[in-house]
Image (cartoon, rainbow, N blue to C red; front, top):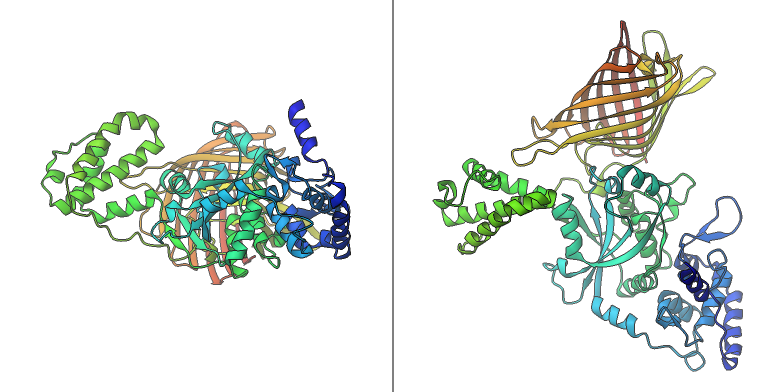
Length: 637
C-alpha cells in the first residue's frame, strides 16, 4: 500500500526543466495561456474532462493518478497543461519511457499547436511506442458490435469494441487483426447479484486492452452465441494515428466502470473522439440522467458520418442451426445421435453417403460437439475422443463441405427503434378514465418493432407510468427492470427461458384501475421455463412463476404466490406485433387470494419513431374481477 501510494505521488510531481530550457518553457506556457489551449475542447477530450454537475469547473473521469502530470491535474486543465509542457524537457522516465512518449497524443497536439522548436525542445526516441505501432501497422479501424446476451448481466445490452486492421491484411483475414476492448476487471466467479449492483454503482475499474481479434470472435461468436456486426469507420490515416496515440497513453489507466454510463461503448466513443478535433460523439450522453446503450453509440457514429456498411459474422449457434436446416432429416438424426453417444461413425446414415454429404455431416457434427464442450466442460472429457474421430474421418474426404450462406438479418442493430420511449394515452375501466403518461429509459419490449432486436424478448430499464385526472397526478407503476428471455427449443438446442421483473406496483386488481385507491409496494416476479416456435415469426412460452408483493394492502403486509405464466408473441410484420399473456397464481404465504391475469397487446408502428399500442387487461382476485383498456401513442427517441 505504501509503495503504490509513493509511486502515485512520485509520478504526479511536476517536472522542472534544466535552467537552459526554463526560458523556452516559460515562452511555451505563456503562448499556451494566450491561446487559451487549456480551455480547448480537444485538450479536455484528451484528458477526459467533464463539466461538474453542480459546482463550477471540470473533473476528469479518469481515476488513475498515473494519467496526470500535475498534482491537481484531475480537476485543473491549466495546471495539467503546464506540467505536461514542463515534463517534455526532462529525460526522466515515466513508467519506463520518456514523457513525450508516454503521453503521445498530448505531445503531438501541443507540438502542432505551439510549433515546438526542435533545437530548443528536441524530440525523444520512443522505442516502445514505435515497436507497438509497427506491430499494429494500422490500415483501417472498424467498430464491432456484439449482439446482446440476456443470459449475462454484463452483456444484456450488447457490447462494442474496435478492430484495427493491418496493412497487407486481405478482406478474408480479419481474424488476424487486433481488437481494442474496454471492460471492467471482474472475477468470473463473482455472484451475479453483487456483480450487477457494483457495476451500477461504479464499483469496478475499467481499462482499455488490446487482444488478437480471433480471441474476441472465439469468446463472443463461438462461446457466448453472440452475432457480430463489423462496421468500418471512415477515418483518414492521420485520424487513425491520433486515435492510436491516445490509446497508447491510456495503457494501464483505469476509470470507475458504470454499466449504464461510463461503460465500454461510452469509453470507445471517447477514444474515437480523439481522432478529429471537430468530433462530438459523447456530448449527448452527458445529461444528468443519461445512459449509454451500445446500440445507441452505433447511431451516434452513423449520424457523424463515420459508420460504413457492416459485415455480419453469425455466432456458431446460429451457423450450426443453419447447417442443420441444410441437411436431410436422416442426416440431422445421425448428427444428434452421434453427438449424444447413440450412434457411431459406422452408422449407415453417415458411412454409406456420398463423400460430399459425408463431409457436411462430419463438419456439422464437430461444430455441434465443440459447442457442447463450451457450454458444459464435463461433456468435453466424455466427448473429446469422439470429436477427434470425427476430425480424422473428415480428413480422409477431399471434397469440400459447401453450405448455403447464413441469412443476414433483414435489419441491422442501428436500424432498429430508438431505445428510449415516451407514451401518451388513455386508460379506461368500467368506472373511470384517466390519461396515461409513461416514459421508459431503455430498451425493448415484446410489442416494440422487432427489427434489430432479439425477437420475442423483453429487456426494459426504468419504466415509469403516471395516471392523470382532473387536478390529480399519481404514479401508476415504477418498473426498475424487466427481463424476459424467450429462447425457443429446437431439435439441437433446448435452452431455458427465464424472466425477472421488479419495481413498485399496486397490489392485485388495483394495478388495472384508472383511479387506484391502494398504495404502491415493492414487487419481485421471477421464473423459468421453456419456449417453442410454432411458426417462423412467433414464440410460445410457459414459465413456472413466483411472485412476491410487499404491500400494506396485502392481507399480512405481503403476498407470496406461485403459479404459471404462459404466452404467445407474434411479429406479424416489421411494424405489426401482438402478444397474449396469462398468469395463474396460487397463494403460498401472506395474502390467501388466488390471482388470474390476462393481457392482450397489439402495436402498429406507423412511422419509424411513432407507434400506436392497444392493451386489453383482465384480472381476477378472490371473487372480484377487473377490466381495463389502454390506447397509447408511443414516441421513440
